[in-house]
Image 1: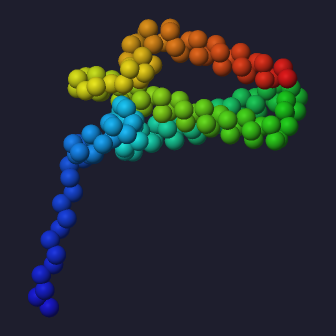
Image 2 (image 1 turned 120 degrees about the vertical axis):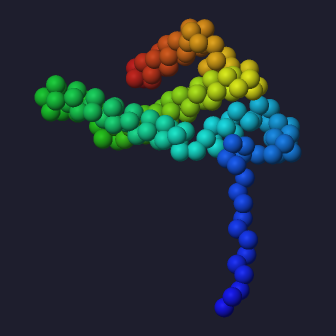
Image 3 (image 1 turned 90 degrees about the vertical axis):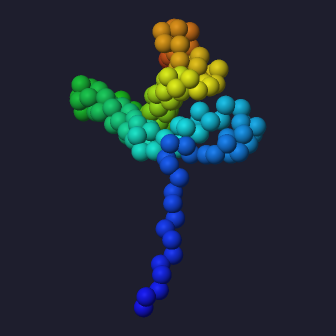
Length: 153
């Protein structure tokens, strides 16, 4: 009965998710993959942002349609199948928004720690008002025009 228990496995510190060999092979396989790896290994806060945005966006859209129905005399402006497609697309859009917010946080922390940031991520999230005016505003205008053209079909 006095058997010795096997030694406990020691887990590595959570500060680094991968060792130097893994980083080198990851860099060779996908350029600048460590920034995206930081996103998907970010833990609960990152997935909470993505999941929260993916849940909040379709709820917002659904309640907007309910409000339009109340103002229109109780009749929904669209049929049920179309509403389901719109809610599914808004869920995907919400997840994109959550991931985008998380990537912005990751880019900021990598820049503060003087770690390398991929050029594309730096242009999208790391240049402040320049990123907003050069990419995000035209992207919003393009998406608005695309949705408008699709509704006219």
